[in-house]
Length: 150
Image 1 (cartoon, rainbow, N blue to C red):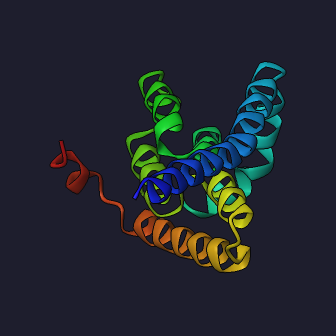
Image 2 (tube, rainbow, N blue to C red):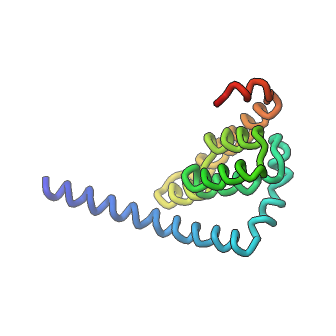
Image 3 (cartoon, rainbow, N blue to C red):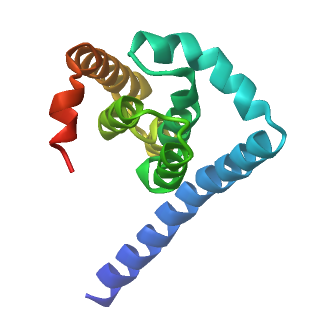
């Protein structure tokens, strides 16, 4: 029993260390990109894709943050962009929709690949589904319907 407990604790700690060796460098890189304004250039690169999904270019930065770091970290960015008027109600809705399906793409994919998962099976279906569903909703978006949502 003690050996099983030890193995469980040891295995858990080793998994956390594997995850930390991926997450911490990613967070540092993102802060450097943000501080050096390179993230604005990256957002410009993703602008055509974001526009195809029916969003404005301003929604590219929160979308990228959500794809890299997940909903927890990007929620602050999304809310701040919305409060500052950088994102319309439609952009806010579509960014959140996309990220519900396809959040933390970089982080999750790297972590799960490190643990032995197939990267293509993780990444491609999520991206395709998120893109198609967001595109579909952007075409069906109706401001009157959205006014009823709190």
